[in-house]
Amino acid sequence: MANITLKGNAVKTVGNLPQIGDNLKDFKLVNEKLEEKTLSDYSGKRIILNIFPSIDTGICAESARKFNVEAGTLNNAVVINVSKDLPFALGRFCAAEGLNHVESLSDYRGTFGDDYGVEMEDSPMQGLLSRAVIVADENGKVIYTEQVPEIAQEPDYQNALAALA
Image (cartoon, rainbow, N blue to C red):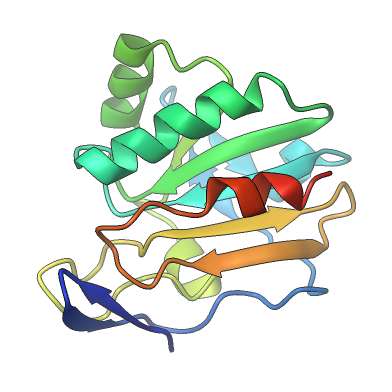
Protein backbone atom coordinates (compact mmCIF):
# COMPACT_ATOMS: atom_id res chain seq x y z
CA MET A 1 0.00 0.00 0.00
CA ALA A 2 1.10 3.54 -0.66
CA ASN A 3 1.31 6.04 2.15
CA ILE A 4 0.16 9.43 0.99
CA THR A 5 -1.31 12.47 2.69
CA LEU A 6 -4.36 14.69 2.46
CA LYS A 7 -3.42 18.15 3.72
CA GLY A 8 -0.69 16.55 5.82
CA ASN A 9 -2.85 13.76 7.28
CA ALA A 10 -1.84 10.18 6.52
CA VAL A 11 -3.89 8.22 3.98
CA LYS A 12 -3.38 4.62 2.87
CA THR A 13 -4.19 3.10 -0.48
CA VAL A 14 -5.19 -0.52 -1.03
CA GLY A 15 -1.97 -1.28 -2.89
CA ASN A 16 0.82 0.11 -5.01
CA LEU A 17 0.99 1.34 -8.58
CA PRO A 18 2.18 -1.06 -11.25
CA GLN A 19 5.93 -1.09 -11.62
CA ILE A 20 7.84 0.15 -14.64
CA GLY A 21 8.10 -2.76 -17.06
CA ASP A 22 4.77 -4.30 -15.96
CA ASN A 23 1.95 -4.60 -18.45
CA LEU A 24 -1.17 -2.56 -17.79
CA LYS A 25 -3.96 -4.62 -16.31
CA ASP A 26 -7.16 -4.80 -18.28
CA PHE A 27 -9.92 -2.53 -17.01
CA LYS A 28 -13.61 -1.84 -17.50
CA LEU A 29 -14.42 1.82 -17.14
CA VAL A 30 -17.55 3.71 -18.20
CA ASN A 31 -17.83 6.76 -20.47
CA GLU A 32 -20.51 9.48 -20.41
CA LYS A 33 -22.71 7.38 -22.74
CA LEU A 34 -22.58 4.53 -20.20
CA GLU A 35 -20.50 2.46 -22.62
CA GLU A 36 -17.81 0.22 -21.17
CA LYS A 37 -14.27 0.92 -22.29
CA THR A 38 -11.48 -1.61 -21.83
CA LEU A 39 -7.75 -1.58 -22.36
CA SER A 40 -8.20 -3.23 -25.76
CA ASP A 41 -10.08 -0.12 -26.97
CA TYR A 42 -6.71 1.65 -26.88
CA SER A 43 -4.65 -1.10 -28.48
CA GLY A 44 -1.56 0.24 -30.25
CA LYS A 45 -1.79 3.66 -28.57
CA ARG A 46 0.43 5.13 -25.91
CA ILE A 47 -1.62 5.83 -22.79
CA ILE A 48 -1.48 8.38 -19.99
CA LEU A 49 -3.80 7.47 -17.12
CA ASN A 50 -4.54 10.65 -15.15
CA ILE A 51 -6.11 9.23 -11.98
CA PHE A 52 -7.75 11.45 -9.37
CA PRO A 53 -10.38 11.55 -6.58
CA SER A 54 -13.06 13.81 -8.12
CA ILE A 55 -13.39 16.22 -11.03
CA ASP A 56 -15.32 18.48 -8.63
CA THR A 57 -12.15 19.52 -6.81
CA GLY A 58 -9.81 22.27 -7.98
CA ILE A 59 -6.63 20.20 -8.34
CA CYS A 60 -8.39 17.38 -10.18
CA ALA A 61 -10.08 19.82 -12.54
CA GLU A 62 -6.77 21.56 -13.19
CA SER A 63 -5.01 18.28 -14.00
CA ALA A 64 -7.75 17.44 -16.51
CA ARG A 65 -7.36 20.88 -18.12
CA LYS A 66 -3.56 20.71 -18.30
CA PHE A 67 -3.47 17.20 -19.71
CA ASN A 68 -6.14 18.22 -22.25
CA VAL A 69 -3.87 20.97 -23.58
CA GLU A 70 -0.93 18.58 -23.86
CA ALA A 71 -3.00 15.73 -25.32
CA GLY A 72 -3.77 17.85 -28.35
CA THR A 73 -0.07 17.79 -29.26
CA LEU A 74 0.65 14.09 -28.71
CA ASN A 75 1.11 11.58 -31.52
CA ASN A 76 -0.46 8.12 -31.21
CA ALA A 77 -1.33 8.75 -27.58
CA VAL A 78 -4.46 9.13 -25.49
CA VAL A 79 -4.93 10.76 -22.10
CA ILE A 80 -7.58 9.04 -20.00
CA ASN A 81 -8.89 10.76 -16.87
CA VAL A 82 -10.04 8.14 -14.35
CA SER A 83 -12.09 8.77 -11.22
CA LYS A 84 -15.09 7.36 -9.38
CA ASP A 85 -17.21 10.35 -10.42
CA LEU A 86 -20.40 9.42 -12.20
CA PRO A 87 -19.95 9.39 -15.98
CA PHE A 88 -22.54 12.17 -16.32
CA ALA A 89 -20.53 14.52 -14.09
CA LEU A 90 -17.34 13.81 -16.02
CA GLY A 91 -19.09 14.40 -19.33
CA ARG A 92 -20.72 17.61 -18.11
CA PHE A 93 -17.40 18.98 -16.83
CA CYS A 94 -15.51 18.15 -20.02
CA ALA A 95 -18.25 19.66 -22.20
CA ALA A 96 -18.40 22.86 -20.12
CA GLU A 97 -14.61 23.19 -20.15
CA GLY A 98 -14.17 22.28 -23.82
CA LEU A 99 -11.93 19.32 -22.97
CA ASN A 100 -11.99 17.47 -26.26
CA HIS A 101 -8.47 15.97 -26.33
CA VAL A 102 -8.90 13.70 -23.30
CA GLU A 103 -11.27 10.88 -22.44
CA SER A 104 -12.85 10.84 -19.00
CA LEU A 105 -13.90 7.46 -17.69
CA SER A 106 -15.58 6.41 -14.48
CA ASP A 107 -14.71 3.55 -12.15
CA TYR A 108 -18.02 3.91 -10.30
CA ARG A 109 -18.93 0.26 -10.87
CA GLY A 110 -15.53 -1.29 -11.55
CA THR A 111 -12.43 -2.64 -9.87
CA PHE A 112 -9.85 -0.25 -11.36
CA GLY A 113 -9.05 1.26 -7.95
CA ASP A 114 -8.21 -2.14 -6.48
CA ASP A 115 -6.51 -3.49 -9.60
CA TYR A 116 -4.21 -0.48 -9.90
CA GLY A 117 -3.68 -0.03 -6.13
CA VAL A 118 -5.09 3.50 -6.07
CA GLU A 119 -8.29 3.21 -4.04
CA MET A 120 -7.97 5.03 -0.72
CA GLU A 121 -8.85 2.77 2.20
CA ASP A 122 -9.14 5.36 4.94
CA SER A 123 -9.58 9.10 5.51
CA PRO A 124 -12.61 11.21 4.60
CA MET A 125 -11.88 10.26 0.96
CA GLN A 126 -12.12 6.53 1.62
CA GLY A 127 -13.34 4.68 -1.46
CA LEU A 128 -12.17 7.34 -3.93
CA LEU A 129 -9.06 7.03 -6.09
CA SER A 130 -5.76 8.62 -5.12
CA ARG A 131 -3.99 11.11 -7.39
CA ALA A 132 -1.61 9.19 -9.65
CA VAL A 133 -0.30 9.08 -13.20
CA ILE A 134 0.60 5.95 -15.14
CA VAL A 135 2.12 6.09 -18.63
CA ALA A 136 2.33 3.08 -20.92
CA ASP A 137 3.85 2.56 -24.36
CA GLU A 138 1.89 1.34 -27.40
CA ASN A 139 2.32 -2.26 -26.21
CA GLY A 140 0.73 -1.54 -22.83
CA LYS A 141 4.06 -1.69 -20.96
CA VAL A 142 4.31 0.74 -18.05
CA ILE A 143 7.08 3.29 -18.68
CA TYR A 144 6.32 5.87 -15.96
CA THR A 145 4.38 6.07 -12.70
CA GLU A 146 3.77 8.73 -10.11
CA GLN A 147 1.82 8.23 -6.92
CA VAL A 148 1.42 11.88 -5.96
CA PRO A 149 2.45 11.99 -2.29
CA GLU A 150 0.02 14.77 -1.26
CA ILE A 151 -3.51 14.59 -2.67
CA ALA A 152 -3.75 18.40 -2.67
CA GLN A 153 -0.72 18.59 -5.01
CA GLU A 154 -0.73 18.44 -8.82
CA PRO A 155 1.06 15.62 -10.61
CA ASP A 156 4.39 16.15 -12.36
CA TYR A 157 3.09 16.84 -15.88
CA GLN A 158 6.54 17.36 -17.41
CA ASN A 159 7.92 14.00 -16.30
CA ALA A 160 4.79 12.16 -17.36
CA LEU A 161 4.87 13.72 -20.82
CA ALA A 162 8.64 13.28 -21.13
CA ALA A 163 8.14 9.52 -20.73
CA LEU A 164 6.48 9.55 -24.15
CA ALA A 165 9.38 11.37 -25.83
